[in-house]
Image 1 (spheres, rainbow, N blue to C red):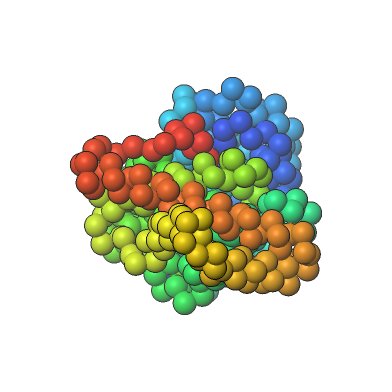
Image 2: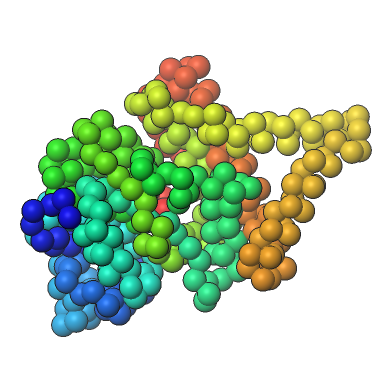
Amino acid sequence: MQTEQKLLFSIIVPVYNRRQELKELLESLVRQTHRDFEVVIVEDGSQDASKDVVEKFDEVLRITYLFKENSGPGLSRNYGMQHASGNYFIILDSDVILPENYMEIVRYELEQNYVDVYGGPDAAAQDFTPTQKAINYAMTSIFTTGGIRGKVQSLEKFHPRSFNMGISKQVFKKTQGFSPMRFGEDIDFSIRIFSEGFKSRLIPSAYVFHKRRNTIRQFFKQVYNSGIARINLYKRHPKSLKTVHFFPAIFTLSLLAMTLIFIFVCKYALLPFFLYFILLFIDASIKNKSILIGAYSALMSFVMLMGYGLGFMQAFWMRILLKRQEFSSFEKTFYK
């Protein structure tokens, strides 16, 4: 182990109007096989506060509840880390559930191969709804995102996401934590971490069950803002924009163009998209052992590509062509 002192874990969780999800997360923390950690809950100006939920875990967890004015998840995570007593911070979203050996895996992996930053993938639990499983497929499939979330080949320079990541206290002191960005703040944070010379890695077995949004409307909002965030990130970090990030916009423009051709010129114009839909349906049905989830997954994949593509194009138009200032569209949906 490359650190001279014992790892003292502080779990940081920002929460905004997510009482039930937070309760399920805390229940999963109680079941951990490794219990040497504290929990810091940061209520980010919620109207439906969760203080009473947290208080029910006072006797079974070392837990601290903090309330602050609403600022979004990034600054709330910073607030939690400022008040934490550990030397290694594990940052989780309030809508995740941990397998019972999550903390044991993280402790073991860091003791064997210490890094100042790690990230883990996400998965769908067996009891998730068909919609949640479909969204998980859309966000992680090789046929939609290229498998870039939790890809094993990224072990040496993995960009962790804020739903499941860990950083040393030294990283926080050096970088001052997350920026005020409403969306894309975790990618911005990762880029700044690397610029300071810190190393990261993916721990594939340190996965979380991620509920995410559970309606088409909420999911569309999330991915639309993610498309906008990608251009905002480009303006802050020009080298961060890669070819793969253009795919949803190309998909969206092609679908719109082929729809017009289908209506006015050729009845076979949409055939490639139909075949792509069938591919997603078959792959998701096999992976989830459900035709229903397969159909939902194909639908959610289209929602994701269209939403991200439209947000990306809007931001490209406003920020790059019109040279407007940084913005996000659905500013009330801070929590992913």
